[in-house]
Image (spheres, rainbow, N blue to C red):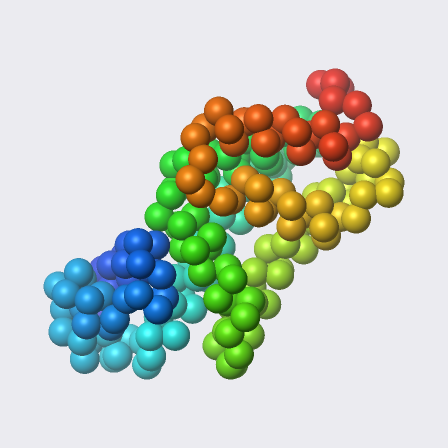
Length: 190
């Protein structure tokens, strides 16, 4: 059990450090200091800073997906589903700011950095975008979303506009309303 606790302690320290300073701004020494462990112990669990970051990145996206899609999985009425999805996204941005900062702060680096690890990070991000696009496609199939909307472009717009920080909750709610008006043919509660 001690090993699992130590690993989690390292991951938590890394999340906070990466969210504050970004991947390039943080050293493994700093993460070790924050976690209260020796640098060698970090390398025992994570062979490189990139692998540690990969674990943090995947964890952040997994938690985001669980938060968003868990909120809408049992909703059958599409209008309510998309509204709940957007509300859940606003909630994630405002309540889980450490994870959101990691995603937003490092998204450009992930997209532009070559290498095997970075390709996996990119792939994980695009898998998330695909899930959002599938939600929009569902709306098109059910005749709620304008058929001429490019689902992937809309998914990227949603993720970029809601996910960016800093924004206050009122601004995020306004963005949510604009997204709904642009996506939906009508916005009734049916």
